[in-house]
Amino acid sequence: MIKLLLPFLFLCALGNHTDGVDPMKAVLQKSVILPIENSDNKHRESENPATVYALRRGCSHNDYWQNPPLFKALNLGYLYIEADILLIKNRLVVAHRRPLRPAKTPDLQELYLDPLMEIYKRQGYFYKDHPEPIFLMIDIKTDAEETYSKLLEIIEPYKSILTSFVDGVEVPGAITLIITGNRPIETIAAESERWVAIDGRPLDLGKGYPVNLMPMISEKYSTILGWTTTFGTKSPKNILKVQDFVSKAQAEGRLTRLWKIPENPTAWSWLTYHGIDLLNTDNLPKLHDYLRSAESSPDYAEKPE
Image (cartoon, rainbow, N blue to C red):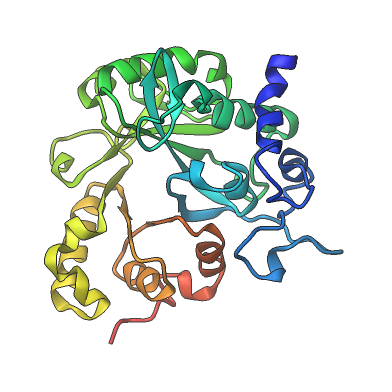
C-alpha cells in the first residue's frame, strides 16, 4: 500500500501549483477543474465549478514539463498526453534527454501509469462525456527495440485498463498507448497480440499498415512547410503543403497531427480549416480556451485571407 501511494505523494510535493488542492482529489471529485496558472478566472474553482469536457483534438506535448504533470492535462480535458521515455539502468525514465541524475528522475509508472490506474479504478472513467479511451503517447528516445521490450514488461500490471489488439481486432480499454519517436514498427506490426498503436510519419503512407496499428500520421510543422514557414498562414505554398499532407493521410483513414506548431489561435484556426485533426501544445490553458470556442470547429474556422 505504501508503495502504491508513493507516486501520489511525489506529485503532491511538486510545488504550490494547486494552491493546496490535491490533484488526485480534484480529479476524483467529478473532474472539477483545478486552479491553473496562466489561465483566466473562469477556469478556477468557484461556488459553481465547471465540469471538464474532453478535448478531442488537444494533445499535451511533453506533458512531463507541465505543473503538475498529467493532472493539469486531465483537469483541462486533454485526450492525448505525451511522455518521453529513456531506458536507463533498466528503468523507463521520463525525460526529454538523459538527465544528470537518472536515479532521481521519475519513471513512467510513477508519473503516468500508476496515477492513471488509480484514477480509473476509483471512478471508472476519465471524462464523463467521453467513454472512449484516452491516449498516452509514449515517445521513445533510446533504442527502439530495447526500450519497447522493457515497456512490454512494465505495462504487464496495467493491462486490465489498456486497449489491446488481438489478431488485428481492437479490444477497447480505458487507455490506448501510442508509440512515437523511435518506433520498432515491424516488431509491433508482427505481434498477434499487441498492446500499443503506432504514430506514423508521411513516409509510412502507402505501405498498407492497418489503421488500428497506425491511427495517425504526424510530422513537425516546419518539416511540412519548409522554408515557407516564415510566411505563415498567408502563403499559398503553405496551404498546398498542408493540404497535401492531410489529403494523403485522410485518404487512408488516419488522423493528422503536426508538432511544434505556432501557439496562437490564428495558426490553430488556419490548420483546422485545412484539415489538421490534432493540435499539439505546451500551453494547455490557451489551447483549452480555443478548443472550447466555436472558432475551433472546421465549420466555423476562419478562412485565411
